[in-house]
Length: 410
Image 1 (spheres, rainbow, N blue to C red):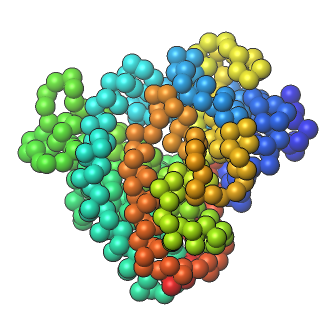
Image 2 (image 1 turned 45 degrees about the vertical axis):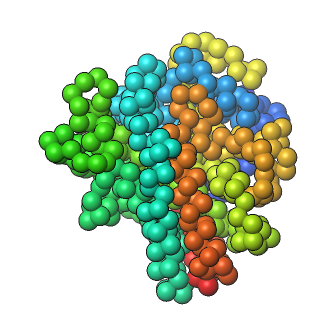
Image 3 (image 1 turned 90 degrees about the vertical axis):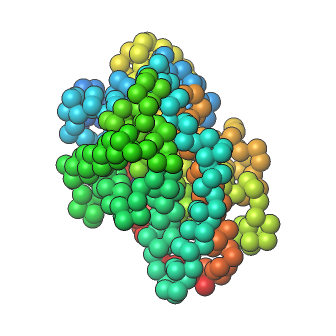
């Protein structure tokens, strides 16, 4: 049924909305009146074969869906919620090869393998190299005097972290960055990237990763690729599985952390008291609040495998359910004054890394490390950094992205 607080035809996956803002007032209205609300999509989504989806806005309901994969499937329609995609059913089904779009038990099998690369020991082994890289990135940006924070600072460390993790040669790293950009920017006409260009970029990245895996099987090295693919048994990934794993890293590990860093910088520069607090005390809780505040992934989706009830709504088998993390992370029933950016917030049970369950972010510890390292480097090297323009947002149906943030490096 229509929600009186929303304009007719409002769609929470409309990329035109996110080009300007995250619809926090609309989320707040739904949490109060219709926490699980049917959002009609009369224009249709070709491959999904339906006419809308359920908008889940409360923290507790997002967590419930996230922890019940037997009722709410990531595989049936994938995890990516779309506005007006022309993707065919075959194209959607092909994306089940990505871990993000798997259900147990297949998801558990692949995750158990790839998490070898995200052990505390593995992350600690990267720390010194990433700290040096963060300091270099910031020092080089400072020499420019002014510039775009996104391209000068926020972009590179997440890319380098993934490249270090899986052993991508330095000469190839800009190609990974370019492919990643094209895969996620298909909704933004300014970038002149279509879904076809994005699909081609994904294919090139998968091919590159498969070739890298094949080379490591032939000649193992001391990197995660060799550990994941070298041995011929069920406990390892075959080359095409590794290719899709790298595809996931390029988006889930690169784009999301980049946007968290950018939103975090903007939050500091618009909340100078928090920047002064950070420079003085460097609270250990900072990265978690940045991720809550930024919520780089606005939403993912699941599909009901059976008739069920959620938040008072009757959900039918086959209907899609949108998990709106941006709403959950601003739920006043969970967070005291969620509208306040507070880097000392503790506890901070945000869902910026997912709502728990099997799809909880595998790379959380690496993302937190990157955020900590880059802001330490900024505070040490350019403590008086200042805004030089308003952020320009990415036009996207599901990412809270910033494509440009002009600053003065001082």
